[in-house]
Length: 342
Image (tube, rainbow, N blue to C red; front, side, top):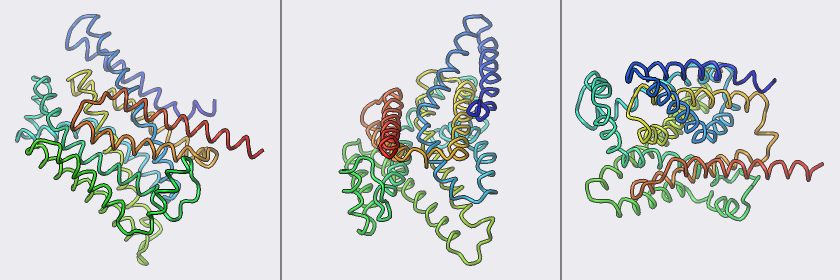
C-alpha cells in the first residue's frame, strides 16, 4: 500500500488520459473502432515513455537529494508541468516552426489538418535532435564515470579505467567531440552541418548548466533558497528534454496525432514523476548500491544509440529494452551485494 500511494496521482491521470484518448478517437472517426484504436495507442505511448524514462527518474532522484527543499518542490510541480506540456506539446510544434518557417499558430493548424505532413517535418529534424540529445546525454554519463571522487564501481574494469582519466582536464569534452566528428564524417554534407551545429549546441547547453550551477553553489551571496537550486533545476529540465527527444520522435511511428501523442507521453511522464518521488522519499538509491550506476550506463547507451540513429533506424523498443536491461542487472547486483554483507 505504501508504494501505491506514490502512484495514486499517476493512476488518476492515466484513467482521465485514456478516456480523453478514447473520446478523441470518437471525434476523429465516429466509430467504436476509432475509439479502441486511439485508446490502445495512448496506452502504448504511455508504456513507451515509462520504459524510456525509468533511468531519468533515477538520475532525477539522485540530483534531488542535493537540492534545497523549496527547489525540490518547484521541480516536482513546475518542472513536471514544463516536462509534460513543454516537451510533449510545445517541443514538436517548435520543431515544425524552425524546420518549415511557419508560425506557431500555422504549425498547430498543420498538426490538426495535415498530421502526416506535420509528422514528416518532425521526422526530418531527427539528425539535429539526435546531435543535441546524444551529446548532452553523453556528457551527463561521462561526467559521472570520469570522476576522481567516485569510489564505488559496478562494472569494475570499465569504471575504474574511466576514473583514471579524471585527472586529465577536459577529457570528457574531447571524447564527445571526437565521437561527434566521427559520426559527422559519415553523414551527407548538409546533414553533417546540421548534426555538428546541434551537437555543439548540446555541449554548450551542458557546459552552461554546469557553469550556472557552479556559480550559484559557490557564490558567497547565494541565499539558501537559490543555492544549489537554480542550477540543479535547469540541469534536470535540460536532461528531461534530452530524454524526451527519443520518445517524442518514436511516438510519430505510432500516430501522427499531436494531441494523442501529448496524452500518451504525458501519462508516462506522470509515472516518471511518481517514481522520482518514491526513490527520494524511500531512499532507494542508498538501499540499492549499484542502481544509480545502471541508470548512467543506460544513459550512455542511449546517447550512443541516438548518434547511431543518424545513420540507421534504431527501434525505440530496442532503446527501451537495453535501458531496462542495465537497470535490472544493476538492481540484481545490488541485491546480491546486500545479501553478501549480512
